[in-house]
Image (cartoon, rainbow, N blue to C red):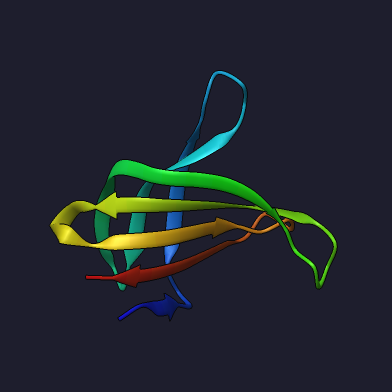
Length: 81
């Protein structure tokens, strides 16, 4: 079961092209390293007309997370076990 986490934080690093990639997710005060990126895509946000990036990641502890970077620069995280 996936749940959107309102107070999750994402730490990222810029790659050689300057694109950010999630490296660590902080969920309720616990830090989880991103072990692997399973999928990455850019999608059009039909409501706002802007682009957003989505990563499906495997985290430490057996978690899988959907991490979204919204056009305004904020992050949205949904995690499941």
